[in-house]
Image 1 (tube, one colour):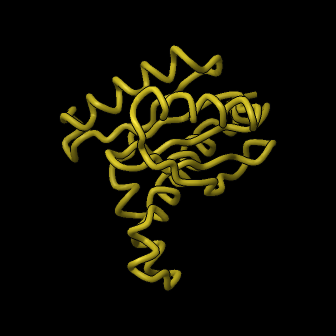
Image 2 (image 1 turned 60 degrees about the horizontal axis):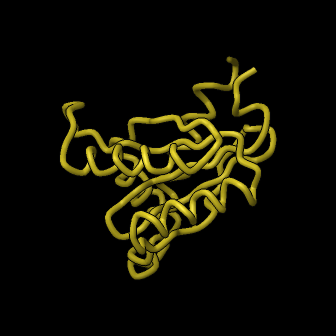
Image 3 (image 1 turned 60 degrees about the vertical axis):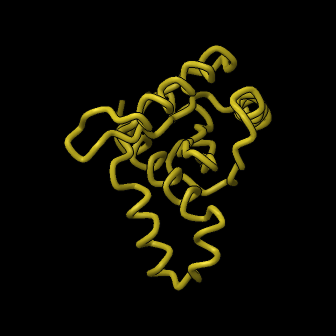
Length: 145
Protein backbone atom coordinates (compact mmCIF):
# COMPACT_ATOMS: atom_id res chain seq x y z
CA UNK A 1 0.00 0.00 0.00
CA UNK A 2 1.04 3.59 -0.60
CA UNK A 3 1.96 5.99 2.17
CA UNK A 4 -1.25 7.87 1.40
CA UNK A 5 -3.25 4.77 2.33
CA UNK A 6 -1.69 4.59 5.81
CA UNK A 7 -2.71 7.92 7.28
CA UNK A 8 -3.33 11.55 6.58
CA UNK A 9 -1.33 13.42 3.98
CA UNK A 10 -0.85 17.18 4.01
CA UNK A 11 -0.92 19.06 0.68
CA UNK A 12 0.70 22.47 0.14
CA UNK A 13 0.32 25.10 -2.56
CA UNK A 14 3.21 27.46 -1.77
CA UNK A 15 2.79 31.01 -3.02
CA UNK A 16 4.55 34.31 -2.40
CA UNK A 17 1.92 35.64 0.04
CA UNK A 18 0.03 32.54 1.15
CA UNK A 19 0.34 28.79 1.47
CA UNK A 20 -2.82 26.90 0.65
CA UNK A 21 -3.15 23.77 2.77
CA UNK A 22 -5.24 20.65 2.23
CA UNK A 23 -5.52 17.42 4.21
CA UNK A 24 -6.49 13.92 3.21
CA UNK A 25 -8.93 11.75 5.07
CA UNK A 26 -7.33 9.04 7.29
CA UNK A 27 -7.61 6.43 4.52
CA UNK A 28 -5.90 8.65 1.96
CA UNK A 29 -8.83 8.58 -0.45
CA UNK A 30 -9.87 12.20 -0.68
CA UNK A 31 -8.46 15.67 -0.09
CA UNK A 32 -10.25 18.55 1.59
CA UNK A 33 -9.20 22.18 1.91
CA UNK A 34 -7.82 22.81 5.42
CA UNK A 35 -6.66 26.43 5.71
CA UNK A 36 -4.60 29.24 4.26
CA UNK A 37 -1.38 30.24 5.95
CA UNK A 38 -0.43 33.89 5.44
CA UNK A 39 3.32 33.97 4.80
CA UNK A 40 5.25 35.52 7.71
CA UNK A 41 8.81 34.49 6.82
CA UNK A 42 10.62 31.21 6.18
CA UNK A 43 11.24 30.31 9.83
CA UNK A 44 7.66 31.01 10.94
CA UNK A 45 6.19 29.34 7.85
CA UNK A 46 8.24 26.16 8.35
CA UNK A 47 7.30 26.07 12.04
CA UNK A 48 3.62 26.39 11.12
CA UNK A 49 3.87 23.53 8.59
CA UNK A 50 5.74 21.36 11.12
CA UNK A 51 3.05 22.08 13.72
CA UNK A 52 0.31 21.03 11.27
CA UNK A 53 2.15 17.81 10.41
CA UNK A 54 2.42 17.01 14.13
CA UNK A 55 -1.12 18.06 15.04
CA UNK A 56 -2.70 16.00 12.26
CA UNK A 57 -0.17 13.17 12.50
CA UNK A 58 0.46 13.49 8.77
CA UNK A 59 2.42 10.59 7.33
CA UNK A 60 3.60 12.60 4.31
CA UNK A 61 3.56 16.08 2.81
CA UNK A 62 2.89 16.78 -0.87
CA UNK A 63 4.10 20.11 -2.23
CA UNK A 64 3.04 21.52 -5.56
CA UNK A 65 5.98 22.72 -7.65
CA UNK A 66 5.20 25.53 -10.12
CA UNK A 67 7.03 24.55 -13.29
CA UNK A 68 6.49 26.66 -16.39
CA UNK A 69 4.02 25.45 -19.01
CA UNK A 70 7.03 24.05 -20.87
CA UNK A 71 8.06 22.05 -17.81
CA UNK A 72 11.12 24.13 -16.98
CA UNK A 73 12.06 25.84 -13.74
CA UNK A 74 11.36 29.51 -13.07
CA UNK A 75 12.44 31.80 -10.22
CA UNK A 76 9.25 30.81 -8.38
CA UNK A 77 10.06 27.12 -8.90
CA UNK A 78 13.46 27.69 -7.31
CA UNK A 79 11.91 29.58 -4.37
CA UNK A 80 9.44 26.75 -3.73
CA UNK A 81 12.18 24.11 -3.96
CA UNK A 82 14.32 26.07 -1.48
CA UNK A 83 11.33 26.28 0.87
CA UNK A 84 10.79 22.51 0.49
CA UNK A 85 14.37 21.91 1.66
CA UNK A 86 13.68 23.99 4.79
CA UNK A 87 10.50 21.99 5.44
CA UNK A 88 12.40 18.72 4.91
CA UNK A 89 14.87 19.73 7.61
CA UNK A 90 12.07 20.41 10.10
CA UNK A 91 9.52 17.69 9.37
CA UNK A 92 10.06 13.96 9.99
CA UNK A 93 7.48 12.93 7.35
CA UNK A 94 8.53 12.29 3.74
CA UNK A 95 8.05 15.23 1.37
CA UNK A 96 6.78 14.49 -2.14
CA UNK A 97 6.82 16.94 -5.04
CA UNK A 98 3.95 17.25 -7.54
CA UNK A 99 3.89 19.28 -10.73
CA UNK A 100 1.24 21.89 -10.01
CA UNK A 101 0.91 23.43 -13.45
CA UNK A 102 -2.58 24.83 -13.90
CA UNK A 103 -3.90 23.88 -10.43
CA UNK A 104 -4.43 27.51 -9.42
CA UNK A 105 -6.19 28.15 -12.73
CA UNK A 106 -8.37 25.07 -12.21
CA UNK A 107 -9.04 26.11 -8.61
CA UNK A 108 -10.18 29.53 -9.78
CA UNK A 109 -12.50 27.91 -12.36
CA UNK A 110 -13.94 25.58 -9.71
CA UNK A 111 -14.68 28.52 -7.41
CA UNK A 112 -16.36 30.45 -10.22
CA UNK A 113 -18.45 27.38 -11.05
CA UNK A 114 -19.51 27.16 -7.39
CA UNK A 115 -20.55 30.81 -7.47
CA UNK A 116 -17.88 32.03 -5.03
CA UNK A 117 -17.58 35.80 -5.06
CA UNK A 118 -14.38 37.29 -6.50
CA UNK A 119 -13.57 38.94 -3.15
CA UNK A 120 -13.67 35.58 -1.37
CA UNK A 121 -11.38 34.02 -3.99
CA UNK A 122 -8.82 36.79 -3.49
CA UNK A 123 -8.62 36.03 0.21
CA UNK A 124 -6.90 32.73 -0.37
CA UNK A 125 -9.73 30.32 -1.09
CA UNK A 126 -8.16 29.60 -4.46
CA UNK A 127 -4.93 28.63 -2.64
CA UNK A 128 -6.80 26.03 -0.58
CA UNK A 129 -8.50 24.63 -3.66
CA UNK A 130 -5.16 24.46 -5.51
CA UNK A 131 -3.66 22.56 -2.54
CA UNK A 132 -6.67 20.25 -2.59
CA UNK A 133 -6.20 19.58 -6.33
CA UNK A 134 -2.46 18.91 -5.85
CA UNK A 135 -3.16 16.50 -2.99
CA UNK A 136 -6.07 14.76 -4.71
CA UNK A 137 -3.92 14.16 -7.80
CA UNK A 138 -1.19 12.66 -5.60
CA UNK A 139 -3.67 10.42 -3.75
CA UNK A 140 -5.15 9.13 -7.00
CA UNK A 141 -1.72 8.45 -8.49
CA UNK A 142 -0.68 6.45 -5.42
CA UNK A 143 -3.96 4.75 -4.57
CA UNK A 144 -2.90 1.29 -5.77
CA UNK A 145 0.80 1.35 -4.90
